[in-house]
Every structure is written in structure tokens, then in C-alpha cells.
Image 1 (cartoon, rainbow, N blue to C red):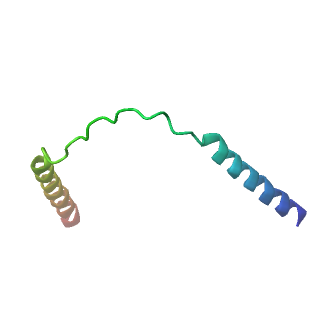
Image 2: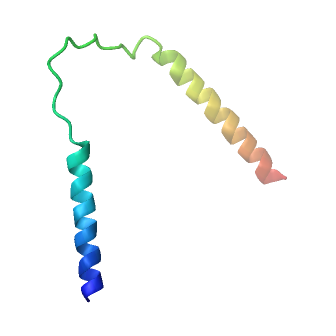
Image 3: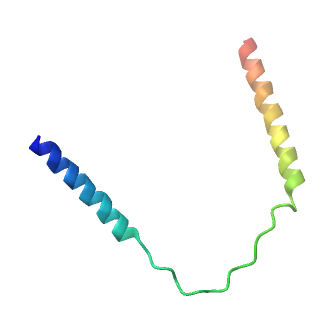
Length: 66
């Protein structure tokens, strides 16, 4: 029972110590960079995704038939 209690306290100490060591204060306020648009190449991304799924399912179907 005593060893389980020691392991519990040691685990608790290590987890709390890691929270404290990785905590950071907020840096001073800097100008944020402008937001990057994602909608300029969305059509190409959708077409590439569809082509990949056709390729994937075509190969999977061929492997099942073998």
C-alpha cells in the first residue's frame, strides 16, 4: 500500500512539475500578420482530392478481384 502511495505522489509531482516548467507568459503585443486566405485554391484542392479517391478505390477494387 505504501509503494502505491509513493508512486501516486511521485506521478502527481512529476505531472505538476511539467505543467509549471512548460508554462509561458504572454509575450508583449506584436502586430499580427495578415490572415492567409484559403479559398483561392480550393477548387484545385477539391479536384485533387476527388482524383486521389478515384485512384485509391480503383486500386483497392483491383486488389480485391485478384
